[in-house]
Image 1 (tube, rainbow, N blue to C red):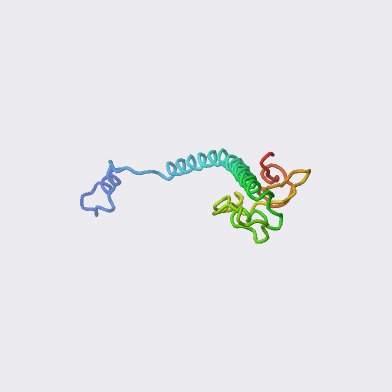
Image 2: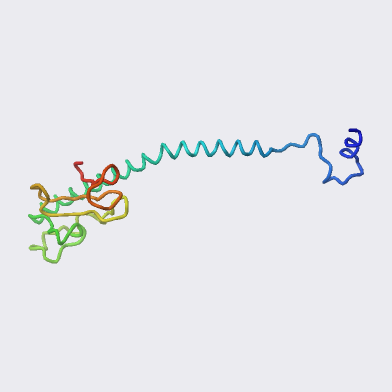
Length: 159
């Protein structure tokens, strides 16, 4: 033991080989505990945030559809008819070439830019709409295919 103490505190040993008694640092165990706690907290946050993102995307799609429906109503008031299915929602941005009275079309269009749904796809438009409606505007949801459930369900303003 005395030999060990003499070697540890021998002033003739090089400085980089001596360990000072007041020297402090983190042990590997302490670092691993901190990393584990950070990982655990990140997991809890992700579990709580991801479902909210899905709900927010559906809410945004419904808001976009409501805006498009309002623009379609304004289009009808000015032009006395809804855009044809062939002209689609682009008729809200630029006047369709087959418009009966182009002078009635609002300068600058009815919306500045046609939005994409939250998943990056264009909204769908059909006139006349299904089940007797004048028109339908919808998104296919997260999966981009008709039907589905939860975030993959088709999204309409009234659904």
